[in-house]
Image 1 (cartoon, rainbow, N blue to C red):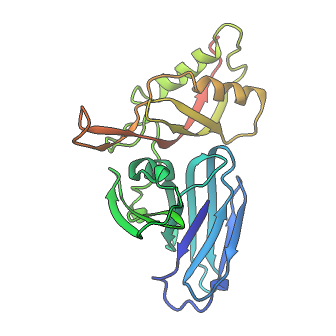
Image 2: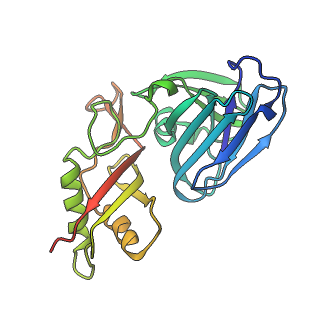
Image 3: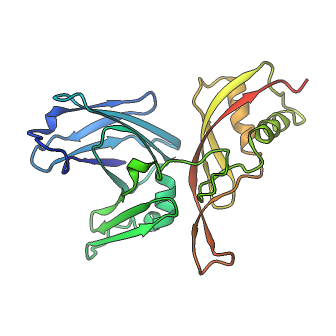
Length: 261
């Protein structure tokens, strides 16, 4: 997946070599363009397959200003929309699945000749610009700095992001119960885990734990896929029956699991 980091609003940039791009704990990051004339860094994020949690630290070496960026999406073997963000110091998170689902970018990936198109859309929590031309599709969230592009979680913030409205304890009980099904064993010991997942338009969740993949961690991942009750992300849509169109969206949450007996 291509990530463009725009330097257009950064003063006194003499060369892209002033910036250092470092990868996080997951995935591989390649800086593929060091052209100092286009005022942007172009980085390739290895999408892989399944739940993708890509973390970048971009540092301006001349000033020490640092941008920490976390991009959450579902990886697969195929083309992904590109993503453009401005270089702004601070920590930011982008739920790319929500942006793709809301804008219809996944159905615009054909590379047929097209009149260049630039459209600003609202995805319920933020605004996003969709660019479409013969080279593909690129998304640019406009509300990065206020956190509106971040993923959902267990708590329902009332802002149209995916959530588990029954609450944290109900989710943990449901996970333990799913692990205790016939032929399976629940947690053998207390476990505190951090998870990243994608809730699709039907409320089904696909999860990956951030901890080392052990047998018990794998069982938790499998159990989560049987847990019902997730509320999908949504955007207002007068054409829908209830005025809401469900979206794919990423979620981040933690689990504090205890053996059931």
